Length: 134
Image (cartoon, rainbow, N blue to C red; front, side, top):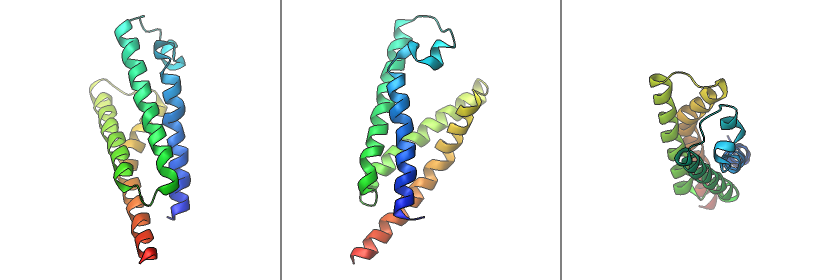
């Protein structure tokens, strides 16, 4: 539960929205959506590209935090809160619409269970850094 482990896990997890956000900017041409044969709708394409950009921005924020992870508590928590809320949206979809592809069920678990865990872990690292300074 060290700072280095948290940085490594955060780096890996930050690459996921960064890379998938870049792909998401392809809108309906994103391979995930292209395979679903969705109708060519400008509003849907626009929304997918917007959310891809937001997801990319979130990933870049996560990567920015990594070097100073023990000091960026507010941003770290804000990012994980956004991920947690997104996970609640996925959970709602799972209940109301049905299960998505298997990887997305894993993402849901990471978002709903992992977010509180990562916030707790970062708070331990931040407290330890404060003790080391004092």
